Each structure stands twice: as structure tokens, then as C-alpha cells.
Amino acid sequence: MLSNIPYDLKRLKGSDLDREILRWGMMAELDAINVYEQMATMTEDPDIRTILLDIAKEEKTHVGEFQALLLARDPEQLKEMEAGRLEVEKELSE
Image (cartoon, rainbow, N blue to C red; front, side, top):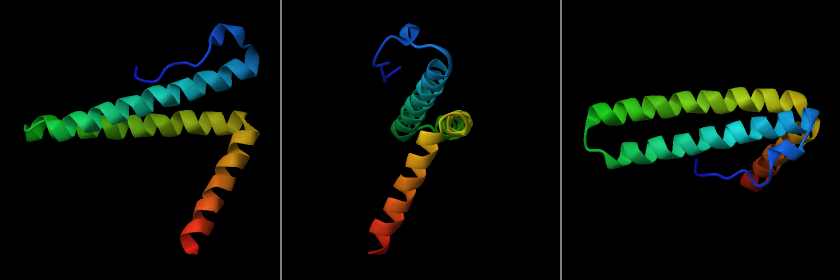
């Protein structure tokens, strides 16, 4: 895995641990997407490229699954993601 867990998950308990597990899962999937897409750009074999990009697409679905679970369990995350979305809309409309 390219990303590292910043601290020992064993120190967390309950819902804090669950939220960190979901974030860690998202990091792992994002790492996988990056690796597969980079390999797809490196290969000259179109069959390998096709399969790598298909697998990367599946990993994007997994990110969405982890995100859905996280947002259901972390109201602050949901609020801040919405704030970020609105900030981008504002910046791009100016």
C-alpha cells in the first residue's frame, strides 16, 4: 500500500475506530486506482490496458461504498464535504 496509516489503529475504540477503518479502506482503494491507471498508461498491450482500466473502475465503486458508510457514520465529514463542494461551485462560477 502506498499510503501509510498515520497512527496505531489499536489505540482507537468503537465508532472512532470504525470511521478510521473506512478511511483506511478508501485510501487503499485510491492507491489501487492510481496504480492500475498508471500501469494502463505504461503498457502497450491493449488487452492489458483494458483490463487494468476495468479493475480501476471497480475500485472507484469500492471508494463509493466506503464513502457511503463513512458519511452515514460521521456527520461532520458529511457537512465538510458539502461545504467543500459549495466552495468549489462558488470559485468556479466567479
